[in-house]
Length: 437
Image (cartoon, rainbow, N blue to C red):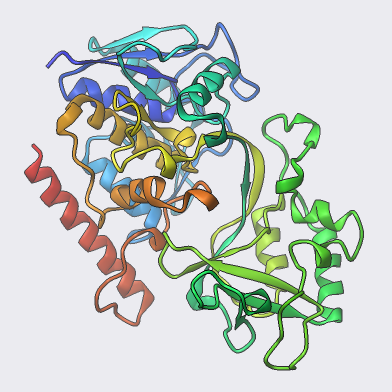
């Protein structure tokens, strides 16, 4: 085939993309600016360096992260193979020895004759070469400017403000009520669930919020200068005890049907249209440790038994508004010779980055013959979210079951239901591979 594809970035996504290109008979040119130019997070010049956690999440069968990894294994993922070789004991989690893992990946990439390594910074995408942009959350300023030029500067984000997401089945609807402020909504329906506080509940919540432990910064956070539009809720609370009530927790225009009065404060939950059966805590991005988030946020009336599909966070990140730009194969609609993969495409997590690298690598080699992964698969659902979520409220995503299509006749038991979703996904993947080999 001898199709040459250039890849910007030697992280998890870029390495997986290069490997998949080589396996498909193409030629990959992997551009990595380290060690000529370092980032605030990386310590070495090796490929696929893990800069935060060394865990690739659970290996418990029939969990959503397990399903994504299982699909990758069946697709011949290099990174999954290296993770298996360098695994260290950690219960149900797939946790690796950082040094051994990056060493395995680096050796595989450097020894493959179909992969050329270029130690340079990509600053221009003006030629007609096929590109995969996998430059990660710390994309260099020069490449970020080039991406902004191609996609439009309003479609490139440099700060990641993510609100928590809860499983709809775990919200207490005897407390939370459906209503839009002043009874107004775009389509005549009540768009939000509202969790009402009385004064005592609000005061206790603020006390717990102010006392909660924050996540230590792995990467320099620009001296913690947050954009006003994405302030962590604990930062808002530090400005005064009533600041939240006049900000993201304002109760104006809402009436609690249990009391017939306006609540003292309220947390609004918005349905995630691209994610089945889940709700976003509106404006509740925060910088608390995940365990602290679970404890504090379960003080919200109606969320006492909430299960969190994603926790909130605020950190430096560069990513595109993918739903406005990419198709389900991660190809840039306006420039079909450019693909995006990894965190810059708007996914969170190591395995999610690997998965998008695999998709982009296979797609770049296939060219006009590229086919999207089935929607029933974890990989296909992740790409469907990236390319099909609401661009006005786009936030990066980890793999969770709410990204996958619901079953037509779902079993009542959750474990049985999740097992069936996984069985359906792997069957769909097998059919896809049979049709595209």
